Image (cartoon, rainbow, N blue to C red; front, side):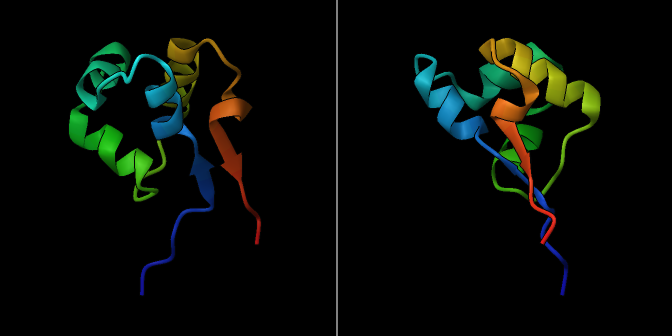
Length: 72
């Protein structure tokens, strides 16, 4: 069975808090596909460091306000 990534995120909550930004709009802003944003939100894909910083910048927050790391 595949192990879930230990990287958690608040991408969906941040999108909704920013005028209900669409997944497509976020994808365009950071240079990925909508499917990639969906996978990140569902924890099925951990973004590259570059994409993680781009997401944080779109929302005007620090990277640790978007992503969390669970060692357990």
